[in-house]
Length: 191
Image (cartoon, rainbow, N blue to C red; front, side, top):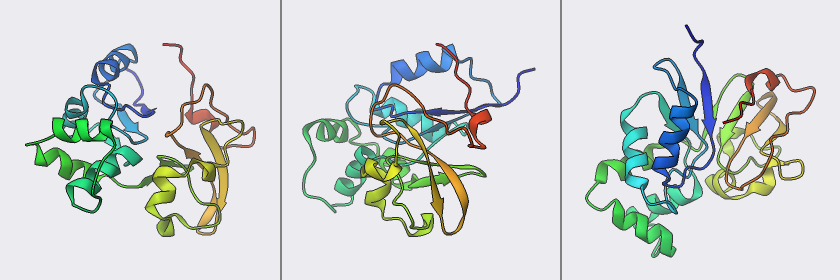
């Protein structure tokens, strides 16, 4: 029997077929869980299918990304327009209010014992509970990434140090500091 795993996946961007291919390759079990770092939607051709999967399968969860948030803000009439790819996705989701409600329900971060999952990064020195949504979904510079790597550490007033698991910007590697207590969480598997 396999041990339950937590699999963190970067920006999916409506690429449902590729997501299913990845899930098959990692042999996802009923005990596993998948956490996306946001941007479930926009760019790829099947945002609706991605949202259907994440909204109906309890093994799947996500934080909100900047493209997801743009769709929600437009739906709520908080912004007057969308970029072309975002508008195309919004049109794809027309008539599926439950999916827009699902997007609106996504949290800006997920906090665990030794790490936090956010879309873009965390403003240094500001407790998670007081972070602005813009910082969490748009401002990658706050991740303090090393050579544009995806994982960094920061100190927070509310409790010790946490590793950040972020998406938003495409990179080729993951950096885990030697002193990190989360290194054993991340295992590299060639797919």
